[in-house]
Amino acid sequence: MEKRLVLALVLSAMVLMVFSFLGPKKITQNPAVKQDAQESVKVEEAVLAPLSYLDHSGKEFTIETEVFKIVYSEKGGWIKNLFLKEYKDKNGNAVDLINGEGTGGLWFNNKDLNQEDFKILHSNTMRGNKEVELSFLYPNGLEIKKNFIFTPNEYDFKFSLEFINHSNEEIKLDSLYLQWGPGINVGEETKRERKMYSLLNISHGKELKRVKWAKLKEPLRLKDEIKWFGLNNKYFLVALVPSEKESELLVRKTENKGIEVGWNVSVPAIAPNGKKKFEIGRASCRERV
Image (cartoon, rainbow, N blue to C red; front, side, top):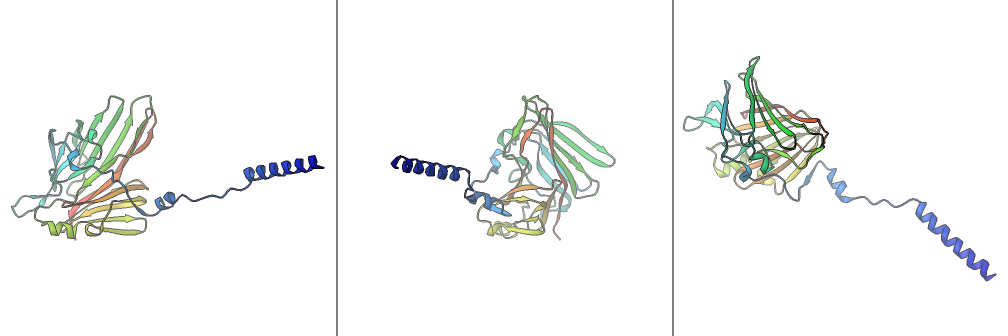
């Protein structure tokens, strides 16, 4: 009798153990995943780079259209000056929306990339459009190309960034952003005006978000459908239209220069002899209306 009782207790315990193993388990939701699914979330640590990452020691070259005069740095292949020839400042000089000493256009958040010498593959005119292509080849077989196309008499241009893997090994590019800013340079503004009018407009899904310098307390990350994003100050606007259906932006404020924005161009993996291309279908640099 006692043996049968002990055997029954042992069998009952085994059944309970098997049921607990095979039965339905309680699923707990990860709050971090839920937060990341929101339209915009706070960024604990911004990965955008300081201006000290820009190297000013490289050679410069200039391209001009009827309305633009653009100065590039071969170190990193970024835009140092973007002059609007038809608009004059108080000294009678063409307005410069970048002024590489205090801001920059389409530069990497990676310090090493900004110090590499990009070669000019070609700079010519085709079908009335002016095109500039810059390239840098790493020893590991990764080639980075930046391409700019300017339309005559238009304050717009197209831009593409292409990563090409010439090796037989997979290459990863993590946490890589192209930055614009901080802010838009116009020397006639006071510090108070820069803070008051510095604004980032983002067409995000079906909404138009307006991020004001004064209300931007912490860095933000915006994901998914970014139709266009644009920095503006009191007088001018620089708007970029990504060709990708889904994009990610990082946004932060600087103390005196305005808002800075970074466009995510990371690539989880580039297959051997493969490539990945990011495009700005339209970049508009013009007076605010």
